[in-house]
Figure (cartoon, rainbow, N blue to C red):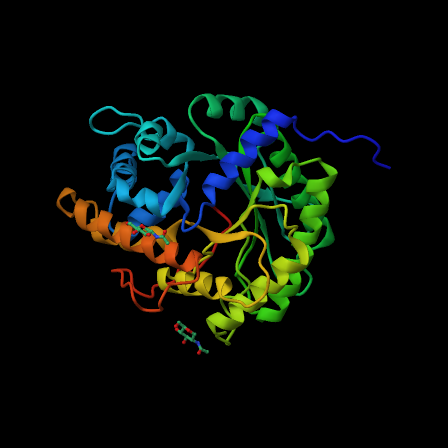
Length: 364
Ligand SMILES: *[C@@H]1O[C@H](CO)[C@@H](O)[C@H](O)[C@H]1NC(C)=O
Ligand SMILES: *[C@@H]1O[C@H](CO)[C@@H](O)[C@H](O)[C@H]1NC(C)=O
């Protein structure tokens, strides 16, 4: 039985809560620019660009040197290890470029999913061994928050009890370690959209996964006021032959969150999980318009759903930089409006249009 409490001390609690609050300030969300080198090669392949360190630097420079007004809609950016130590043409480190705009730098700290032996072909995520040292260094190098993703797959017999408890425990240990190094953990239990399940199944799985996760977070004395959740939206599987309306998706999402996420958590920042840019905005907007009490900020932590049009407009050409940056600003504004429930469907068009991303692997 628990007798003593080991939450972070008062000063750490204040620092963590303050960072978390800034990340979910009204009308703001997070840009996930932390695609791994492998994933970048897939993104670049679409625009016919070679996946070199210099091309990755040029692309991230484009994102981070976008006009400072983007900071009215973007509170933080998640970086990949390599990106944290890259610089602009003029020699300014990327984290400094972001700070100057009032954007908080964060970092992906997990080392990717690996097979979970003895499970139903499921996964766990590695990277805990040297995490305290890595977090201490990242904090020194300017990052105030971190991100760690675990994946769960939906099938007739999954997610298994083994996968749910293992991944909840890994996420809880990651979160506790981050907090000990004064970094806000973004906790990401990503229920994959692969499969032909319907929305009701996804809702039940989401509720079970989140309740398992919050039990583990409490067992590990994670300070909930200094943590952010990045869940999937509740949708049918990508191979299901049924399309649900945004209102149905919003309702199923809010129902599952209300049943499992304590009001102590300051914010929930959704994954876009393969949705098109427009779908992601419309669904976020719908979630914010569900007429039930929602005690947390409900915003976005989108990767491709903020960048697809920008990357396409850029196409690897210097002359297209400004056009691409404008695409990013447009999506940031659209999602900013969606995060306060004021986005009008179809009011912002991007060059990537309604293009969806079919998820084939667990890589991130
Ligand atoms: C998003 O940023 C714009 C400026 O680019 C600002 O006018 C707008 O108020 C911001 N959106 C929200 C919902 O705060
Ligand atoms: C569902 O929507 C997608 C994207 O708009 C479309 O391609 C697909 O045909 C729709 N499926 C059904 C069964 O209506």
